[in-house]
Length: 156
Image (cartoon, rainbow, N blue to C red):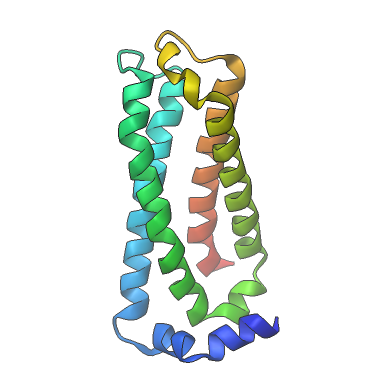
């Protein structure tokens, strides 16, 4: 908790909280990152689960994976700005902590998926194996839940 307090009380935390532009811009960019992440991951996950069968899985992955990664890369620094503005309250929020846990689980699922399956994507135009479909659906559910919890933080 000392690190959380130090971050909130730092010049960075004061800037995030006090600037007329820092927090609103970080919030907007964080949401744009979520759209890129869930849009990219979500469409690919839906394809792996069996939707959009006319689209080749490997080609779709080559287009959507960098978009999702860009979204995640945008969300990390903007999330830090949002956190620094009100770190103590957020650290005490069960909703925020649950969101962080789901982010870790979703990232672990993504890494596991890439390690297990990435070399085989081009063979899945007809259908992905059941385990891969399950991981894709879990991914979709996890990232949507992360987004929902992010929105609920303000109300919890």
